Structures are given as C-alpha cells and as structure tokens.
Amino acid sequence: MKKTMQIPFNRLALSGAEFENMAKAVESGAIQGDGKFTRLCEGKIRKISKADTALLVNSGTAALDMAAILSGVGPGDEVIVPTYTFVSTVNAFVLRGANPVFCDVHPGTLNIDEAKIEELITPKTKVIVPVHYAGVSCEMDSILEIAKRHGLLVVEDAAQGFNAYYRGRHLGTIGDLGALSFHGSKNVVCGEGGALLVGNGAFRSRAFYVREKGTNRVDFVEGKIDKYTWVDIGSSYIPSELVSAFLSAQLDSAEDLTRPRVRAWNRYFERLNPLQERGFIFLPEVPSHCVHNAHIFFIRAQSGEAAKALLASLAGRGVSAVQHYAPLHVCPMAERLGCGRRSLPVAENAAKCMLRMPIFASITDDEVDYVCDCVEEFYAGKHA
Ligand SMILES: *Cc1c(COP(=O)(O)O)cnc(C)c1O
Image (cartoon, rainbow, N blue to C red; front, top):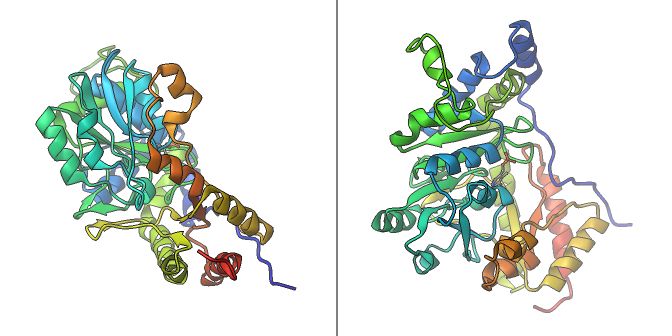
C-alpha cells in the first residue's frame, strides 16, 4: 500500500509568547484598543516595514475601507483594480459609491498587468489599487509613473505582503496608502487584524480620526486638546488589546514565521520544476527585484479539467490543495454593478487552472516531498 500522510492547507504557528502577552493585557485592567500593545505592535510594524506611520486596525478589510475613505472617492469615480483578488479590495471603494474598473493580470505572478492599466483610465479615474498577490510585488515603478502622469492615488493591497519587498522597499509603503492583514490565513497572524500604512503624509492626521470613529481623540491623548470631538467620518477600526497582545508576540517572530515558508517554497519549486520543463504545469514567477514572503505556493495546470483531476487526486492522498479567487468581474455583484462585461482571459484561466499547495511555517521537508511525490505520480505516464 502507498504511504499516506494528512497534510492540511494551513497550520497555525505560534511564537510562544502569545498567551503570556494576553494575560498581561488582562492584568493591566484595560483591554479596549489603543493601549500598550497597540502601540507596541505599531512600533514593530514600523520597524520591519520602515513605514513612517502605521495604524493597527481590525483587519486588512478595515485598512482598505479606511484607505477608500481617505482617498475621497465618491459616486461616479472610478477605481482600477485587478479582477483576480479578494472582495475586500473592491468592496472598500464600492462602499464609497465608486465604480470598479477591472484589469487583467500577469500569468506568472497573477498581479495586475501594468501594461493594461493605462487603457482603462478615463477622466473619472481616481485610484489604482495594485494587489501584491502571494507576497510578490506588482511592478510598482511603472504603476507609480502612470499614477503620477494622470494625477491618481495608489492604494496598495499588501494584505499578503508583510515582510516582502520591492527594490528594497516593504510592500504597502510604496504608494500613498497601504493595507496589511494579520488574518489567521496570513503569515503573521492574530485571528483578525491588519494595519494601514500611510506613505502620503497628507493623509496622516485624518487617518487617526477615521480610525477613532471620526473623532480627534488622538489629539486629546497626545495632550493637544482638553476635550475631543466629532471632526470627520469614521468608524470603530481599533483592535482590542487582547488581539494586539497576541499579535505583538507574532511580530517578534516575523522572521521565524517567514523563513521556513521560503524554504518550503524553494523546495516545491525545485522538486516540481521538472514537471514544468516537461510541459505539464506552470510554476510561479518572482521578478528578480522582488523579495517575497512565500505566502502562497501555486501551480497552474494546463486546463481546468487537469486542475480538477489533480485536486481530487491530491485530496485522495490526504493533501489539502485549494483553488483561489473567482475573478471579481464574473461575480454576481459585478453583474449588478454593470462592471463585469469585459472578458479578462488571463484571470479567468488562472481561476480554473490554478492550485495552491499546503504551505505554513511548520511544514516539514518530508511533507513537501510527499506533496511533490503525489503531484509527480498524478502526471506519471501522462503526456503533456
Ligand atoms: C486577506 C486579504 C484581504 C483581507 O484581509 P482581512 O484581514 O481578512 O480583512 C484583502 N485583500 C487580500 C489580497 C487578502 O489576501
């Protein structure tokens, strides 16, 4: 009988200090947000990302919602987003009344195809939203140049990009605003959490008001005013100290949580490259100027049928591989908004053919080898 292993898609990795920190937060007597651990996390995020300003928030989605508010878009404005992304990237702007304009992606990275952005720009365009898929950066120099030429803002969805870099710059710090996520599925986690990185200083003070329900409480805390008041729109975007306490421990281990993923990513690549050379699968591309964080290891099969069969075969061997996004332009909501009619073939193809392999900090070489054996066995005897 063939050996079988059970390999989950993701496995929670702890730094070890999470519960101790949470106990400290409880003992402090104040577990609402904007306390000691919130500040500690913000300092650690600034240190790693070199961002001038980092605001800890409830989720990557909350960071995107805040970025959309700060960008000032409203009904009739247009926002260019890749179609191959999570719904939060686009909902943030739709909630402001703006219209998404979907762009196709590169087949090798599944990032927005910068060569296709300019043809989508109209007098109504206000923002470009690059999404750094899998922690591999979009082509930011080209995107910034296009944005500058047309007077547009750049909001980076760096939800998957913590501890990943473009020409030495941390993802989320390159555009005007950037969103990070610490959702349980990401590399560094606290269940639900995120951060808004403010690169454009013009947004700095408003960012704090918007996070604190549209009040200038931050100025009160800093002793600048003796009573805080309603000064902007906003909502409740600050995480509890319990969550920040957990995250603070994870942030201390950011390198240790990333390194083993990169090792696994490289092992997958080496082991599966012969199948790519024989024409069975495509492996992800990482441009040489990008340092990625191995958030995702994906492969693309030659057809949707092949991907489905491979997925079923892996499941039968105990391996949880998973597909990813349905391109947003083909979703029912895009239909309702009237922005889903163009065909975007690269993303449509990726949605059918792409599989993500198990990857997490505690995955062992044996586990990666087992997954690769299963993929090889699936293709054994087949013709490309
Ligand atoms: C995870 C993710 C989000 C949302 O982050 P949450 O913290 O789950 O709200 C947004 N965009 C992308 C690309 C993501 O991967």
